Length: 168
Image (tube, rainbow, N blue to C red):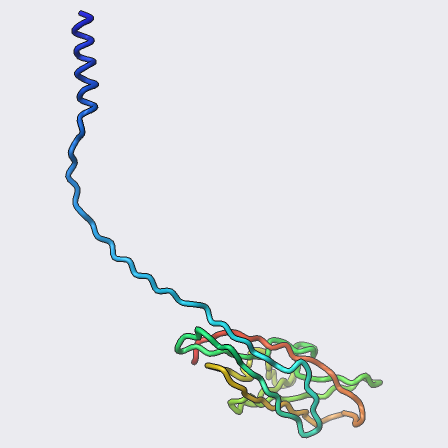
């Protein structure tokens, strides 16, 4: 009886050691790789600007523009100002405090200004844009209306946003 059990176990182990042939279909997978590099660029905006009652031209320069895709541009917009509620104003240290509104005329000729009474806002407005290396100018002008004083310095600031956007 031990010989029969041993023979059955030996037969079972032999069956496990025999390779089994399986039939499989081949499948093909297409692979596509499209490598794109992120755009790189340097935009230079003057750290300070002085203007007189006629205003001034401000030059903005884009250099080392690479990997900008067709249909894209580098957009320079007004992100915020130092004025209350991002109003485009400069202030003098006078008593009482004196403020002076200013306007920007973009390189495309758009008049950008803020006005609390009309709700006009400047934040988000494009000042200049580039599709390659180059220099562009915008105009900045004071709005001489209301109460203002001559012979004092009016100061304020603009923060610009710079990003790659699709051309509209």
